[in-house]
Image (cartoon, rainbow, N blue to C red; front, side, top):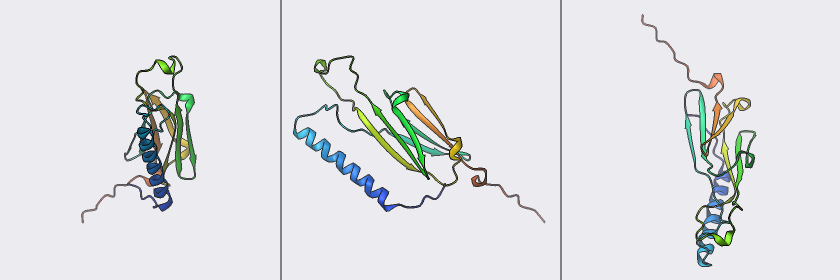
Length: 148
């Protein structure tokens, strides 16, 4: 597993985002907005590592490819997008709206061993899969032991 430099400001921003969401949820409940369509949301992700790559899978049901943006700046991968509220049905016709809509923004710190120019992104069945290949020098090497 790669060693990632600790950034206390990233943790503070994460805590601030969580506190903002907590206050927004509390205020919307107190105003009787149980199924607010303007609530913020964050897609769930799974991240795992193999010998030759790191894979990030993000759940993005209902988000079209044109509304997803992936950027890399230094060693930070940013995933942005928006799930739009469908205008096929008039809003006053809904009896209940439980799914959240709006924009999302996730950032992930990448190890320096990733080949950024070879990152692939595939969206299938509402799941975005990012494959981040590792550089050849970063893969573990097996050392043979001589018997004398």
